[in-house]
Image (tube, rainbow, N blue to C red):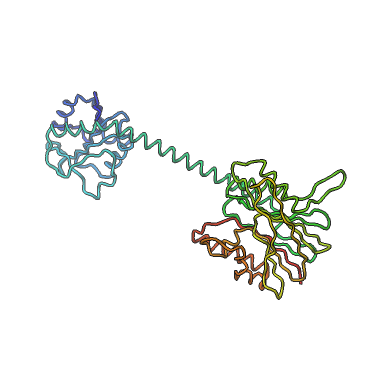
Length: 412
């Protein structure tokens, strides 16, 4: 342990008397001694340069005042020795070092030394104790400095986490504001949407936009991963899936299969380091013919509910986007009849209603009671049930996923 060449000992006295044994010990150490009254020490604290602090409170010393002094010494990484006078007397003719009762030791302070006996201590014992206190000053100071650095680092990390949380909240708000209205009415066709991010920002996004007076485009995108990279990729993909090009003084509507093929090439050639894959579906609804056509890449198959018939999937070929440079996506088509309900969704919906362990069959959602609720109680009640179940699962530490759905229903 490192020795202190000229130790500085701070004496705090109640009535100005120093016991002979203590004076002898200080002389043996060759210590530089500074003296403060109890009142001054309570007002200004322990000297910051002190290697050890010796408190002689006298018989009138109050435990709460001692606690304050010892806590101050601890904050300065200064070892403390308390030498009370004999009980019931203000004389310091018989000095000893003792421990206060347990109910008076409310401050478990760093570096404090106290014994459990009240016998008189010799100059030799006091010299040894003071020397030990002075020698641990430097390691105590290093520990104190390291502790302060850790506290500062923790405060900075906490501040950084708070700033990041605020930025994520803002990004999530912007992402929400980019979404279209949640409900649309296009003649007899109603469009309802559900958008439940797993966190502040989502790896899912959807879009509903008019292409012209007759056609409406719909899109759902699910980027791999979560967080800001996935959210940024969904916005890029959403803008790429608008499906309308201005040419000369007119426009051209791009078919869903061609649009997905183009987006797939762009993703592959961009060669992103994170979130380079997406699953997506793009559809065009024509209000005159009441027909909808779409292409999908990797998303769950759309589900058709028709009155009097079991629910069924409408399947078409198409893998996730961004994995291969050249891919083809099959074009599917459906003609709406009165009472038809067509469900487009990301796989987050399956995770809500299917067993969360293991792999799910591609048609697993067909056997969910929730589809019966959708057919029997209507779109609004079914979507409300999804929201309620997500809240119920979240309260049980369920590993949530982003969830998006578009429900198209033709009036009967």
